[in-house]
Image (cartoon, rainbow, N blue to C red; front, side, top):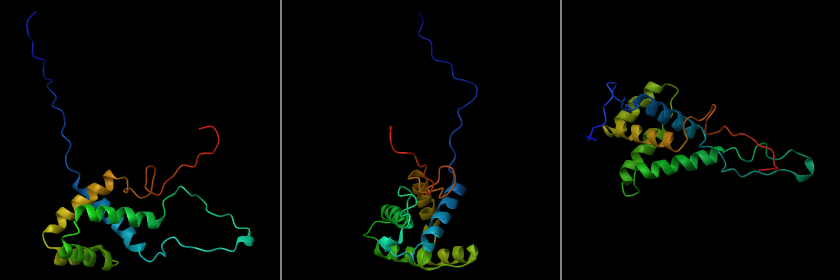
Length: 153
């Protein structure tokens, strides 16, 4: 028997290309939802017990407060707490500034964050995808849950 080297196939394996557009969409979509959820009261609510309400519609479905906590976790991972100035600039550019026009948001973020904006958006977008925060809706979305009846597990 001779030592034969395994033959390489003529078709090279396709390497995975970076998904720049998908990461950017993930970042923009999640941050837009984060900004719109900033006025929540933290999930605290009250109801009259004798009113006969149904209670919680789907207790497994994540709330907007859960989304805010998950996004804050990603922000803490991508921008360390020691970088106070960067965290303040990020907050001013992406959380406090809100405009109807996406172009206005991009121009303002470029002015505040400078050249580090693209790396930050790509890194956070990749984290949102990896952690399952993006997509928010749809078949495998963050807010999509499948209710299964109790009983035989």
